Amino acid sequence: MSDVACTYCGILGHVRVIDSRWSDKYQAMKRRRECTKCRYRWSTVEVDADQVDFLYKNMSARREDPS
Image (tube, rainbow, N blue to C red; front, side, top):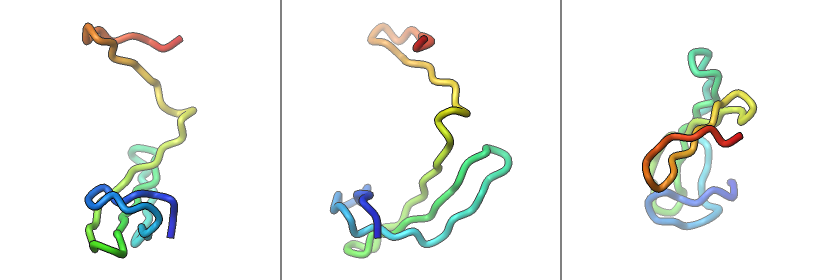
């Protein structure tokens, strides 16, 4: 179990990982998760923050580099 909340019912701590796979194409870990309370299943993708270029969208919808 983990400290992840279910994206469907919102209950915290009753989520388990069913399957994990490394994606070479995206350099990311893909995980299939399931809530043990409502049985809802969904996928997450985890990437290293150092590998991602972040762009922020401000209120005027103009994209800006955070640095």
